[in-house]
Image (cartoon, rainbow, N blue to C red; front, side):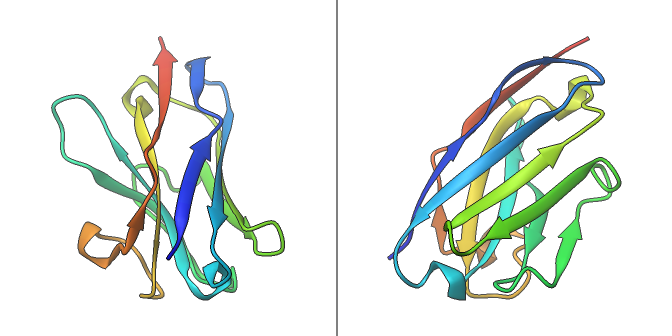
Length: 123
């Protein structure tokens, strides 16, 4: 069993930066790949970024590539999402996810979800 708790969301101006954190509980977290998804009002939850259990593999949605960076610290059981050059269209609730598939780029590959953290971007 893995429990995920996100933090770091908030209000930021367009062009600004935020770093989201996802704290995991469970001794086996280091065995899981992790990822971030987001859901804007009236839209479906969409993939943002994923990282393998070792951190050696990362993959991003085209919409965030070059602006967002996913990383993890297994000793701290924490996954991060550094978001730079934020745009109004990045505003959403961001969800942390974990799964045994090495590449969590779709909802059907997710075994565990966090409850989300809200990111608001003002123009």
